[in-house]
Image (tube, rainbow over all chains, first blue to last red; front, side, top):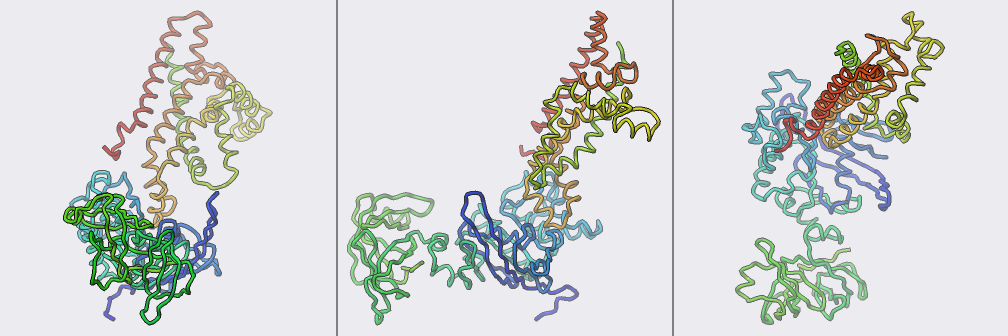
Length: 374
Length: 224
């Protein structure tokens, strides 16, 4: 471990939180999680309504959990059994909201200096200058938030919360609505900043792309609970739950019944509901007759205009194109195989193969592209 | 033209609107942010002067301020003279009467401040006081201007309460509206007209300020 001088080494966030929510007619919701966030970026991933923002609010002290304990490197911020509930303004936690919440009546400079109230004027100016430079927004000093672009606002919001030298950074989908390039640039600056400060960062998102770009550790959350944790690939490429699969970008979620298990081949056969389609999927915890859900990414499906032969892929399904819909650089193709499949192809492929509605096609699925979810 | 009455009215309106600003801000803050379930009761009390005839309010104010009323007794004990038919009594009654005109715009503007900004302020280490002065108040400026201007204009134009509590003492409680009434009673239509016109112009100017502020004509941070 390298020396960090007189600075206190920032610690790990350990939080155990229980909070029930009764929201009018909405069903009873219980947030019940226990997490540990070490230094570096940890992603909190899950569909909207999973309780991600509520968890962040509890950690920041904006909402009081009914039960639990929150500490950062040994400093207790909340402990229901000892009646400790530190006010938000005393927690030294930085929190960037989805809406960013920049003060519209203050200039960029004043926004950034807001959290440095207890410093002397000179020292404050120095720190503001440093952080504005680190996030490349020095030129905007005198501008009001209403006069700068979305990406610039996000940089200013990050600078404002990090200038206070917090012991933890909470980010609630702060980069929503930015294009990939801009996002990557901001994330790089955030990473560069954090190599020096090394605090735990908890980053909430429901965008698969952001997970791939940031990915160190992922906590997957659903319906108030952490459902899995680990490296992004482990957690998101083989989701074990339906909602998470949808959130992680599995466009095809199909109901099926297990026909038989073939242990020696490492597969089992599943008949998809409402069709005669039979596909092979990796062996899972199931017995013949079980009802299962199969998740398949639209981008993992190959499309052929003639029956393919000599492939290692075991699942070849005949169908008919229902519709084609172009979205940016991909074409969403709906194929009726008794049950409806979504397939992503490129506009080039559509032209080269002459794809059109009513055209007969074959779908090719690798066994390992088919994931069982609960 | 009877400038005494005009200056008296302006002095009264100024006192009342500044007092209401001082009393109204903490009350409006509480009404905007408290989660107490009985809050609606206080909201109703604040709104009462909107629906009560000025004579009813003036009557109770007069009774309370009279030598046998609780307020009157207290006043006599403190200052040696009664409160009814004095400038002080007029201020007190006017404050009550203009209460909703100051408090309601303040509550509305405090409530319209984005809660996330308050959260952001707290997370950045600011306590309630600092959050109020640095975030809530600057962002509620149109509401503050509305509150001051409306309570000023409303006090300037009041008649019933003044008549009940203040009577008609030249230089002490004879305000513009009473003066106009007097002129009409004594058939001095020309003089009444001049005063009435002046009041009309002042009221129009004052209301224009309110609407301009609420259209954000001058607010510098409004998105263009």
